[in-house]
Length: 142
Image (cartoon, rainbow, N blue to C red):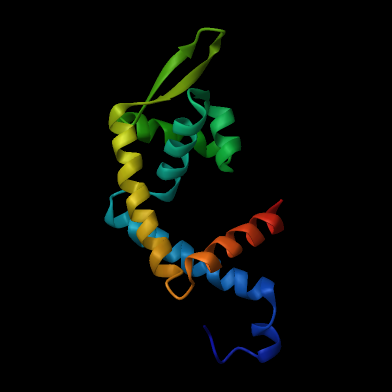
């Protein structure tokens, strides 16, 4: 932590959350770069795996990704063979995005990389502390 920061500042949860977020973002970025991926690859693949074939709009909403970026992101994942686009049988104006077997394998690889980031970032916390932090941050974001 930046010990030169004023005590009053270091005592503010919002400041601490921001610093932790910046550090997490850095570590995730490094891990994804080492895996020749980006964090949004994991988010999109995880959403399609969990919720099944979905529209580009719905995937973007679930992942908090701006719609103006989704087309390029999905095109990249499709080019890599991780997702497929197919016409929606109920609405031919849109495509459904489906996870491929290669995409499932890639998601598992990225999950391992992100789990290692979590272990590194939160190494000073016990498993119980991590669970409590997860619950508390989820409550803050709800």
